[in-house]
Length: 248
Ligand SMILES: [Zn+2]
Image (cartoon, rainbow, N blue to C red; front, top):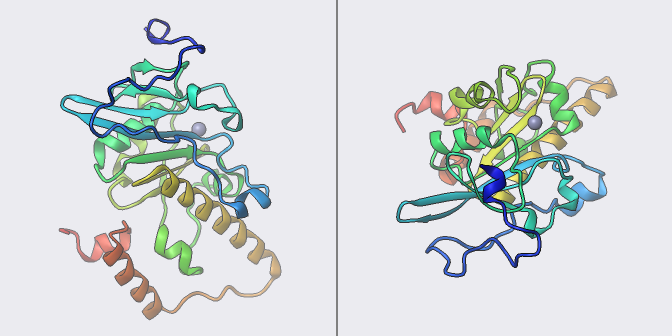
């Protein structure tokens, strides 16, 4: 079925000539920030990225990265257009084998408009211990992520794996995938990729700080409460807010 839906590399672009109302040609592969590039971060070089692309009448589809190609080598024509059942509509494909994970997040949380899944080394180091990094140390991490969830291990690429994140999608925008990697969702691809960078840098900083041999200085609780109030105003998910306001 995938082979039948493919288009040749020589074809102009997969975007239809008459674009649906909300379909915009966008970059599906986020550009890392200069700091990430200079620090040698490979957080997204092996990532799978997908973003909702159009919603016109009964047509709902998404753009995602193909499999078996380095994200650094991807050209715009390599991006795959799929429906929300994971079927290829256009592109050189085959699409990422992890699309099921992305689809479960979109189906469960309409606020998720873009998803990035990858295996950054410092965050994945936590994932193979089955524990999330501690909270209360750096305001940036508290504001944009906060408590990360840890999903149980399942074989990558399977529906069972995709469903491991379901208990956490409403109150966490960042989930560690046990013995595998991480997945982040946001309103745009760029913002989802920012979460990847923030998590990876935070995990790296925490591991370095532990080697200094001095006690870690945690933020006072009243300062955490100020951050949570800010997150409420910004509409950012946080399990701590959900515990205080379960019906909001
Ligand atoms: Zn993976």
